[in-house]
Length: 106
Image (cartoon, rainbow, N blue to C red; front, side):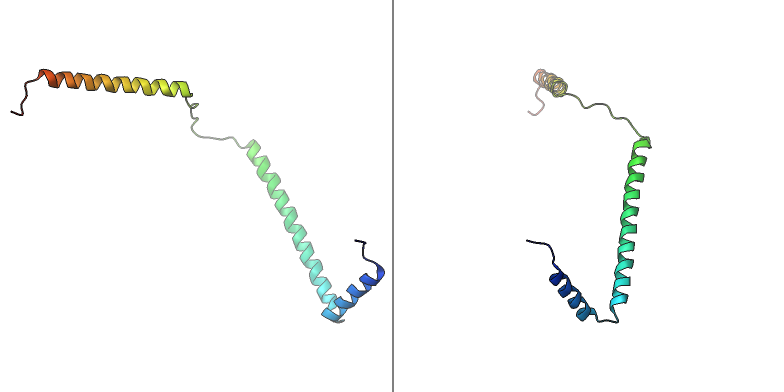
């Protein structure tokens, strides 16, 4: 596709004149210029906010509780095994205590 030639540009200008009318065209152009100026100002404000947020995030110290590192898989499994062994010993002791005691249900 080729760019816009003089004929196409002339047709676009004619369509704009017919669409807006001769008297409303300056007002429409002025309104478009204001809108673009507001848009550019808002975009600049957003960029400034991003820079301020990024700088604040880099320089703001984090206060709060420091959490210990999560245990590794091996440490977690060892802790579970110790807990299971303790529970098994407790159940064996309870079963031995009940086996040696006289049966009170008769």
